[in-house]
Length: 319
Image 1 (tube, rainbow, N blue to C red):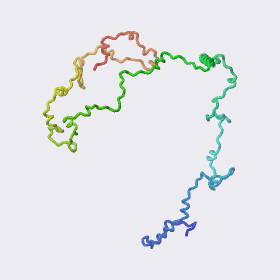
Image 2: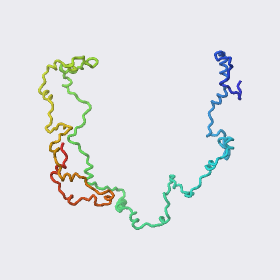
Image 3: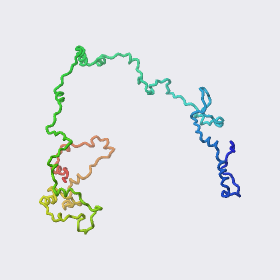
Image 4: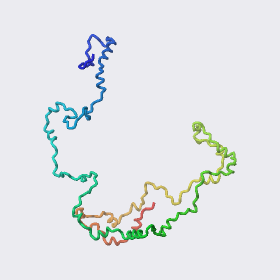
């Protein structure tokens, strides 16, 4: 039995004397089938309603809302805040009614600003009329072209244009590209390799694992052939084996700690050096700021010539 007002109870009270283990399996299946509702499945299978598109047909001039309004919303009382927000916005005193559309940059083809009537009535001066005329040279060329119908006038090229129009010549030391096919000489094709070349052409036999057997520490890692141990080097090999000599102007690396001479440690400073070592005294900033001659150089300093010693000290240290 399926009724409209009947709803299945998922958690129905069971009698205390019957346990879920004692219930018959057939009765349990029947209880599960009773919870199934075909009408409920059909309602859930239908798509949801979209309030944006009306379910009924609307007519022009109809005052009915698209979405139905609940009775609670119709009987609700407005608060003072909602009434204030519902008031229309006041018109600004700067508002200009019937303003031209291009003033808002809507893309219309119209003037950026209006032209005044005096500007439309004014007459141009003689200077403006003279500048508005075409160039005399262009006018004369047009007259000459009109006088000789059916002919075209060409200007004579200058020597510079004639020289530039000459094609660039090929360099005498230029070599053309080689052909793709390389011709091998007959002597190369009929040559017979010597036993030494055949021996060197064989691939080198390496031990499996790319490692050598462990030997004594005095022996080299890679075994040396007996022929190489008994071979005598040539003069050229001995000459190339010699180490390269150091250049004559080479200076070895200087120690991080420089020894100071006895004269430098026991020297005495003169009064002139002490006078020059003192910092220059200037006035306070609030007074120097308004003094225009604070950084003025003395005429004697501009005409002074430095001594040879000063020139020697001014040169950078050569390292």
